[in-house]
Length: 313
Image (cartoon, rainbow, N blue to C red; front, side, top):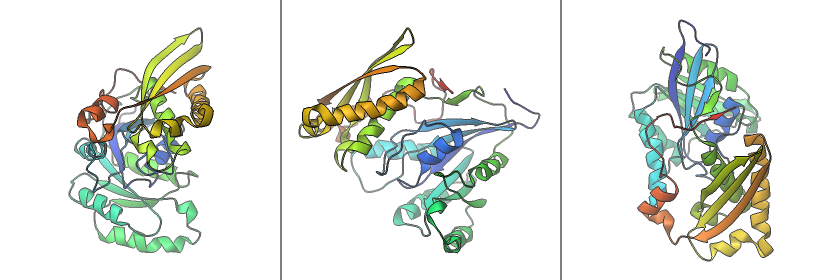
């Protein structure tokens, strides 16, 4: 465990509207994929903890679901709760935006942050897409005038530009404390959870706008024997019409989802994987609070605690 006399350790929440690159930033910081990504907003449904340990600090990054407003579905409410409850437990806030101006969604998240007494840093992401960096000055000026943020740091989570600088700044704001996790550990999530998330990511990337949001993945079997891992996963959809679309003609789409997921799982588990997928219907589950708890949040605490299982890199 790399600790010095002035070692620092604390929780850092990554907040922002959907699809600003929060999960991509976390994966970049860790150098390994633990939080799924896609071009569709609201890909992240859960609080994902990523552990970054250096010689001087352990930064516990919390990737939260994108905060969104206006939806009355039970799933969306649970996602918002997972994000907003995190504000009670962290030592530092990272507010992520993208581009050169603030959207209405950004403004709504800003309002939450401004009501908090927790120190905050503004992170302007996707600067690799801004050719003329002078175009960033208006949004930097706007954020600075709010007097909410200790620092404002432009980064590119995709390319890694300025991410090391961001890490150094984050460590300065963490409290002096001993490390909470072993230095090899990069998340408090289990391999079963990460497996389900990888499968859901491939669904998000393969399908259109409506169906992925009505999908949930349940791992029914996860067994390793003689160096080979057998995984059986059940994909729940909320409408009967969605099942044949997800399966595809002759099972072609489901096979592609399985093949893409298997490649990521081989890397994650570091060994051969046999993956089998099934699709079933649970009507209207995203609007049913009990079904949402059962399928998506059954084993989840909204507070920041260590799980019994964890994944080392």
